[in-house]
Amino acid sequence: MNKEILSEKNIVLNVPSESKDEAIERVGKLLVKNGYVKENYIEGMKAREEEVTTYMGNGVAIPHGMNEYKKQILKTGIVIAQYPGGVDFGEENTAYIVIGIAGKGDDHMEILSSIALTVQYEENVEKLRNAKTEQEIIEIIEKGDN
Image (cartoon, rainbow, N blue to C red; front, side, top):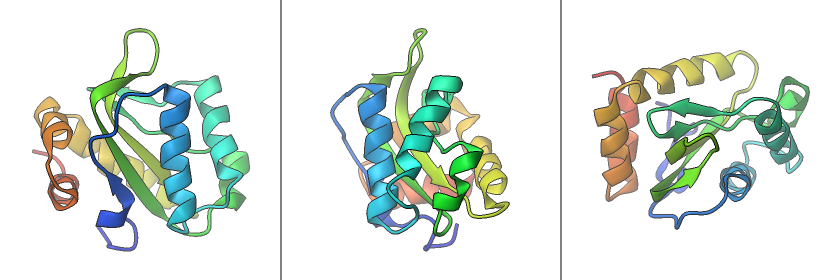
């Protein structure tokens, strides 16, 4: 994956458990800080979560903004927060990896499917959950499916 889309500065390791709103806010602020989106994009991420959960299964949530917030995206990027203790995404769904995404134009679906290929395997999610370095996370994501 392109370094402009995913780099070590886009990854936060060992985040203590927090609420799903705080987790969404955390990855949203990281997208803002690293120049991928404008501040209001975070509102779109929260609105999407209220409408339908972004918990994807296998211990992974992928918060992203609703379509009306696409104009808040400056460039394509993903950020990753690792929660060894997990984040409660409701209905007994615990996310250990929270991936914030912002896709400019049609990049959105391409990024989602690329990430989905990786996280469909529980062993990959387990590796992400136990990764000790940002580089290790990048390698797991780039390797993709088993």
